[in-house]
Amino acid sequence: MIVAVYAVKGGSGRTTIAVNLAAALGLEHRGECVLIDLSLPYNHAALVANLVPTGCLALIDQPDQDKFEDALLGIALHHPTGMVIIPSALRAEQAELVTPPLVKRALDVLEQTFNYIVVDLGVAMTDVTLGVLERANRILVMVTPELTSLKDTAELLQIFENVLKIPSARVSLVLNHPRPQTMVTRADAERQVERKFQTEIAYDGSRFDRAAVTGQVLVETDPSCAASKSVMKLAGSITKEHVGAAKRVKL
Ligand SMILES: Nc1ncnc2c1ncn2[C@@H]1O[C@H](COP(=O)(O)OP(=O)(O)OP(=O)(O)O)[C@@H](O)[C@H]1O
Ligand SMILES: [Mg+2]
Image 1 (cartoon, rainbow, N blue to C red):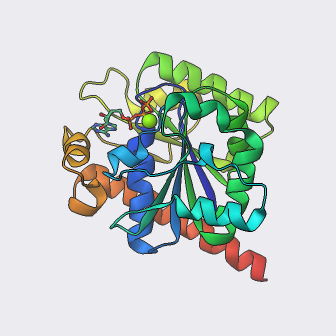
Image 2 (image 1 turned 90 degrees about the vertical axis):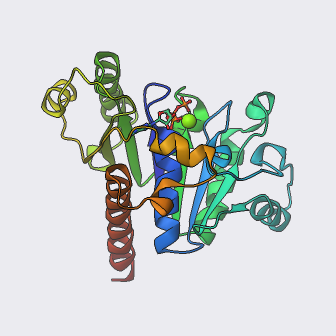
């Protein structure tokens, strides 16, 4: 199952939530969750999870399928929580090497190997981002309670529906509070985007930042704080969706 994490604005919490969500899934299903970092040109997921990349997708130039698979799984970084992280570019100038066919090939391999594939996406609507959004089984759109974020998210939902033909049932909105003050209530935000939020992630002070700086992932070190609980609930709903889909395939 592919879960894409997207937002119309930078700094909305995509990387933070993608890393914590993948870690929550990794804690529940060890070795079954991979986070592929397609937030380009700057990849931050490995850094936030305190892992040091040795390779990246951009540098895999391997026409032979078996060798491609080995190379891809060879750059995977294993985190103590049980999640695996795959960076796509180590340096900004490598971003252009991450082409839609390369990403498709990587996702094909990862779908054979992992039950849960979390994708951290960049803001720009590049062909890579569009390809992932169209293919994802679930799209988590991170929304921050600001007028600009709400207006652009409303426009994004129109594009999903009318241009990309992505069924609205595949899209979940997550209201995230990366800043303490908020002028817009949840109800106001829902009115503005004309959709309900699946979940809301509270402002959790400097917990996320402190965890990243000390090389920890919040859902593991502080599972009882409000933000961790929301992320774990999200992970639970994704597990449920995946198990439900797997049962339907068997029938
Ligand atoms: N719910 C929250 N409570 C407190 N801080 C948060 C919360 N969500 C995100 N943050 C903080 O907000 C900042 C931006 O988050 P993050 O880097 O995950 O956003 P992003 O959408 O990935 O941004 P970028 O555009 O740089 O990729 C980080 O410092 C993160 O720790
Ligand atoms: Mg990011």
